Length: 351
Ligand SMILES: *[C@@H]1O[C@H](CO)[C@@H](O)[C@H](O)[C@H]1NC(C)=O
Image (cartoon, rainbow, N blue to C red; front, top):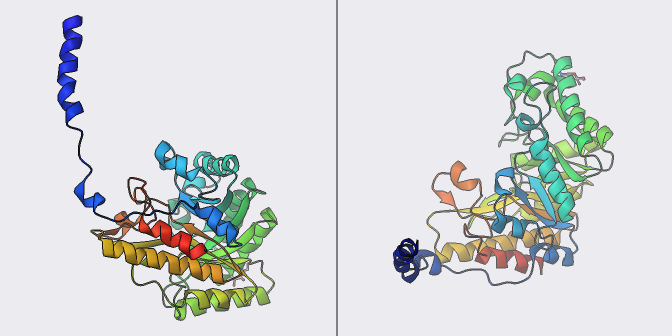
């Protein structure tokens, strides 16, 4: 026994002596230094929240959840995937709530607002929806039923629902999907009315990307909101997803938000990240800090902008690298959960 233990100790000695050095690349890059918590800063600016998306697979990472669960950091969470149609109703009338409940319960435990995401979207649909042979009447019933079940489940818990996600093409025409192709644009008021009936206190949003730039798509969304309002359809907010590129944050962001709030809806930045072409450099990280400051400052300046949600807060779990080849580093914490200059940019934006 003794000799065996001694042998093990001898074998460990070289490991103890040769602790790996901090990688040169990351130590050369600037980090964030602010000790102000992000949601605290947003609330001090009069906003409802600063929040983040999160996903079930990340919730076993205690270094990650230590940051996530502190509502001084994040006062709101959005399930990145758990509430999407393929995950909640994979077969017609078969409901799978485990993952969605986990995130809803986490928000409750943490004292965080919950954004529901989403009811009706062309993507991440189960095949029974995309390949069904529908009539207007049968698909309308499906949209109403899915929206009603989903919104009812979290009645009283959800601050805002993305009832409709990404209804437009970039040229401002309606996206061609099973809902539009079968029901026409009427699927939008149908879903909004079902959501209102299911949870009268939840704010009902339409969420979209590339409406942060002046042009056809923003105009189409402005026209849609105006016509829904005119027809008495329940619509409370517009989500500007805000998946941006370093150095290319739209200068029109604030004025577009003001154009929406002038129609009598609130706005939120719902999926913010600001990606760069890798590798990270000090100059790119500094520009990213400026860009985060610019986006947050735009929300701060618009009284009807209720808050900002980042589409996860660490590069460790960002969707960007798997979606945009060669790009990444889009969030305020690096993949080791160390604050980046972008973090300081967010704090500066709220102040
Ligand atoms: C589908 O029915 C709705 C009424 O529920 C109607 O407003 C809409 O125009 C119809 N769509 C088509 C493509 O006929």
